[in-house]
Image (tube, rainbow, N blue to C red; front, side, top):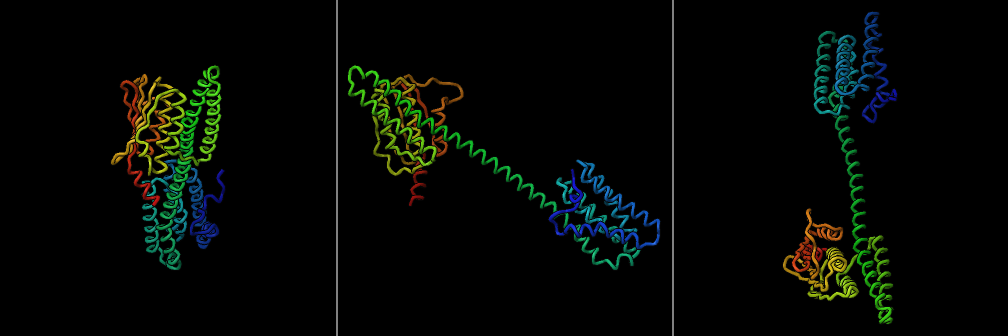
Length: 378
């Protein structure tokens, strides 16, 4: 339900008290004439104006322009008959609340034209009626010119501020979604490798229990150690403070390859220095996921890991002699490989897959990130 005071402008250069005065002032102009007919006409016009003003707030779409037109006509008649030009302030206020640019500018121009024309004609009809209040008339004309623009652009600003708040909320939702996806990828990469290692070592320990209890106990100790590392990494992941080093990751990669009883070779390990933390973390997680895929899905017996620093890029190659990936429509499939691609996109890297007597994954990242990291750290 619309309250009575909602028809009066709030937070404008006129207070509510001034608007009440503008509502009562027409009675003075009407009743200073001794003519009862003019008084009756004035009261009728006054009621018609506020009725039109009320319905203009209730109206929708094009009907609002009809009520505004009635208000302008009443403004003209009141100006010519009684010298009362101040209803034009009410109309100017409402025009400033029109949000459609075309409708605003048309009604704004018509209102200024009719208001000034009525004042000029009124001076010619009865100069003595207008001359004593010429100062107030000038202020009214200035208000009719400035007030609609003030309200119109304030409304646009408030609308833009509302859109900005909506955009901020949407961005917050997207950031939260991205953070959830990142945590899901990190949990998959972290726990996936560790759980795979625990499974492989458990199978190995079960086979060794009967023929080599000492080695079986050693594998069980490794399982316990791996579980402790996994728990620590999950805690660090939740706290958002984990930064994985490639050299540390290589130790765990060697452990999982050894537990899978797979021959492996690491080349170019000496080229791992001077990588920024973010790049090293991304490469570590990609290496972990790639080796986990080799152990779980390739049925390979050998694995080669190659690190190579070139002029403009750093390459990591993971090659196995397994059954290879089956080509599928739609490009890369599997959450592990998709996770690698998503991480590499973050650092403008790329992933290439070659299937020929096994599978070769080639991870490339631009070394410009390294240079930027060096400058920042310096």
